[in-house]
Structures are given as structure tokens and as C-alpha cells.
Image (cartoon, rainbow, N blue to C red; front, side):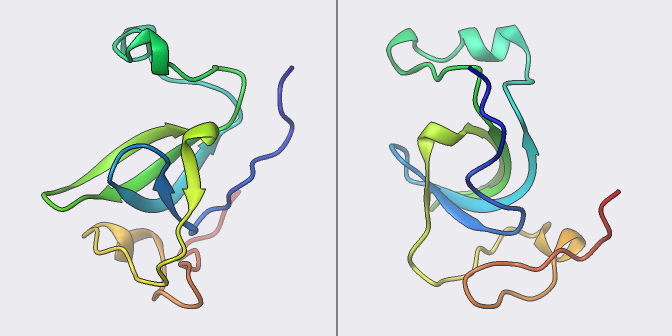
Length: 108
């Protein structure tokens, strides 16, 4: 069954449920929309269902900044109240406030 709405919103700071990284959501796919090769590279015992929202994140961990693609089932809301330091955030969002980032551009 296809879920009709996303749990998280653009500009929200989230954490991965299992891996030590967090990020800011900058796009959402209503269901899996990456390559089959990418999907098959995930170990089968931790492969997420495809029929759920997938989020594009400006992500960070202790070593680097990157873009992540994560299923809704693998995200939790970040409760730290701390900003994300990804260098691309100012290109898409305004200043960090109240635990999230306001959009810096108009959506169509």
C-alpha cells in the first residue's frame, strides 16, 4: 500500500535510526526512486520497503558532509536542537531556527 503523505518536512533535521548521521531534508520522493543497483547494494536483511517516502538529506557525520537518500522507516526526528553544518545548507535554506531550516526558495 502506497503511503499518501510524508512524516517529515522540508527543512527538518532528522537522524538515521541505525547509523551515526543526521541531516536536513531538502527533497522527498513519495516512494523509492533511486536505481535498482543502489537498492540491491543494501544488505537484504536491512533493505527498506520501496513503497514509502524516501528523503534526500544534506547529511553530516563526524568525518564528512554528503547527500544521503534514506527511507522514512530509517529516520527519526533529531531532538538535539543543534544546527547541521553541511556547507550547502545556505544555498537552500534560511538560518536555523526552532529546530529546523526555513526554505530559501519558492516551491512550484
